[in-house]
Image (cartoon, rainbow over all chains, first blue to last red):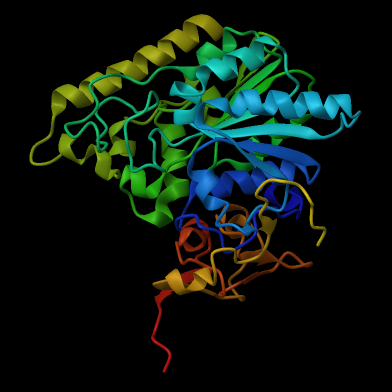
Length: 301
Length: 90
C-alpha cells in the first residue's frame, strides 16, 4: 500500500476549529479514508468535540454523536445495538476518544464494551495529555513531562493501555502512529473486516501540548517510533506482530535511537536540559524504555 | 441537504464551519510545480485537507482555508514547497 493508492474520500472538511498542525485531524482523515462514508462516529469530550466546530455547522461529513466524557464505548454499544435491530449491519460504528477519555475516565465503559463483544472499533488518539481542557496530566503522560498540573515534571511512568486491552483477549487490537499513514490505513482496513470489538491506539504528537513548533508533528511521530517510546504492533487473536521500525527494534536489527533525540525537541521536557542536564531523570526514562523492550522481547520474540 | 426533524441539536456539515481559516496564516506555502514529483506526501499529511489532489496526482493548495502550519513544506522530500511570510493586502 503506497500513498498513491489511498482513496480520495474526504470527510474532514477544510475550515475546522483544529489548531494548525493538529494530529487529530490528520488521523481522522486516514480513518475516514479507510472506513468510508458508511460510518457512525461517537465522540466524547476531547479535542475532536471542539474540532467539529460550532452549531449549526460541523466539519465532519459523516454522522457524529457527541456524548459525555466517560461514555464513548457505552454510547457506541447503544448505536451498534440500534443498527443491529434495524438490520443495518454493514454500517461501521467507531468510538473516537482521546487518551483522557480512554486511559482514565472512559476505561470502565470501554472494558465493559469489550467484554460484551460489541461489534465496533474503538480508536484512541493518544496525545499524552488532556489538551482540550488546557494540558493537564493524564494516565498516558510520560515520566518527567511538564503539564499544567505537573509543573516540575510528572513523577510517575505512563501506564500500558495496550496491554490492558490485550488482557480482554479481543479479536484485534493495534498501535499505530499518525506519521505512518499507510500502516494506520492497513490496520483500520483489517479492523473493519473483523467482527467483534477492535481497539486501535494512535500516537498523536500535539504541538501546543508538547510545546514544539507546529510543522514538526510528523517528525515527532517518526522519532517516537524510532526511539522506541512508542511501538507499532498488531495483536490479532492472541498473536503479536510488530510492524515497521518497531519490528526491526524488537529483533535487534537496528538499535533504537536514544530517547533524548525525541524529547530534546519538546518544550515539555525543557526542564531536563535547562539550566543543566538532569542526568538522573534522563537515565530513568532510558532505563524504563529498555525495560519495556526487554519485556516485549521476552514475551513476543 | 436533507434536514432531519428530530428533537435534538443537529449540526450540518459545511466547508469552513469556523469561517475562512486562511486568515490564521502567518506563513504561506508556495508550491513549485516544476520540482514536484507527485509523491503526495503533502496531501496525506495535511491536517486540514487543504492540499487538493488533482486527477493526474499533481497537487494544488486551497489558500482560503490553509492555516499555514508548514507540515507540507516539512514533509516534502524534494523541497518543492517553501513557506513565505504573508504580506498585508492593501
